[in-house]
Length: 64
Image (cartoon, rainbow, N blue to C red; front, side, top):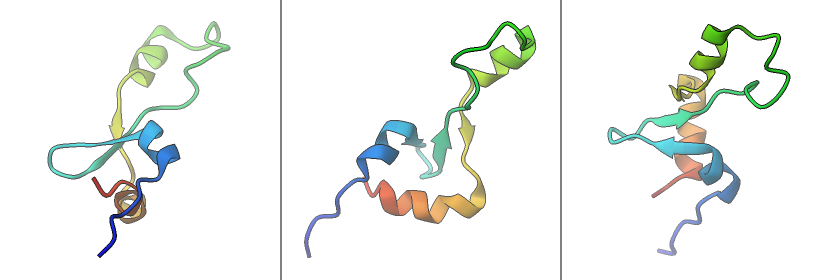
């Protein structure tokens, strides 16, 4: 059986947790930050588990 290739775009955007879930970072945190509240900007720093409906396709992209 050949090795599976990692989707390089996905590997730069997502990480796997120890339990195998895929985690993503938030968008909207790069620029135009003056109009956003301090609380909102702080919460955008945190990573969050990707949606349940996207988990199977993300797991296929990140086999290792």
